Length: 153
Length: 223
Image (cartoon, rainbow over all chains, first blue to last red):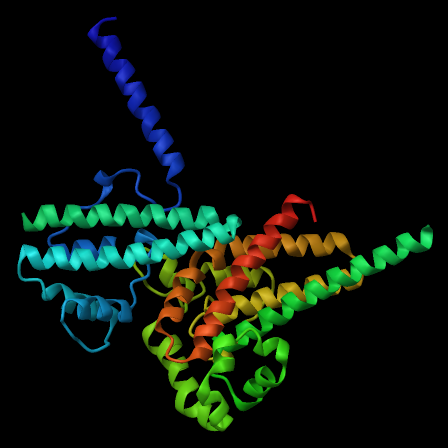
């Protein structure tokens, strides 16, 4: 086998992988962690990739944001969700703060994923729907780490 | 022998009809409770029917329910909670959960509205006091209407029609309510300020999921 054959074989394999991933991810989930867009700041990145329930599989409500902030001894009034999110993010003034914020997001995600698992065990017909949300939520957690790496290190 | 078989068939048919009637009643109840504030008439109905009250176990034991007049309970607690949960702080509309931009689709482009149009299901937004047809209360009312049509078909012995309607119910739950309502209702449960709305969210969530389980099973068994 010469180098040309090997390259063709690799190319075939890569396109096969892409086809498999695309077939597996027709429910809004990420084919891989590289498919995220570039964002000018961590605020835009998290608001666009984590806050939409369709993307992360999790609904972060105003009360969730308030409760997460309170865990970090920060308090703000209930307000428009986007404004509350911005206020929470503006609290971050160091990489350590960001780690704490990410920790709170992950705790909320884990708590909800545990509930998803309970319901999908109780009602097996719903497993595909809950599994899809859990998969998105796990990708969201990885993305939060990536945001930290990208903007805080 | 013939009489025994007929009797058995009658009992089965009665059981199927009873189950269908229960389903449509529960959809009517949760649709009404999640769509608008409760009024005295509805609260009286819930409190005076043991079967319905059993769906609200925490509300049943709530000390304020026993010590306050219905009117006061509604005005001081239940309406305040409803406003917080359904009008101010949580989003009871499907499009918010199904769109990447987290926006609500209030126009004719709303896919749920388009589906309603196909089935000639008219939503009077002003009367319902909702902003779009993909409000959880309206989607549950759509399920109620489907269950009602299925019940009538079963009463008439039109099993093929009943099966077709059950297929539509299955698809609507799968594509819509099962996909997004748990995200909303889990937050209602954790953020409810009264046992009434905690129980209402729990009832709606468990019922949507168990009804989908049951319809899935029926589909497997070919109805």
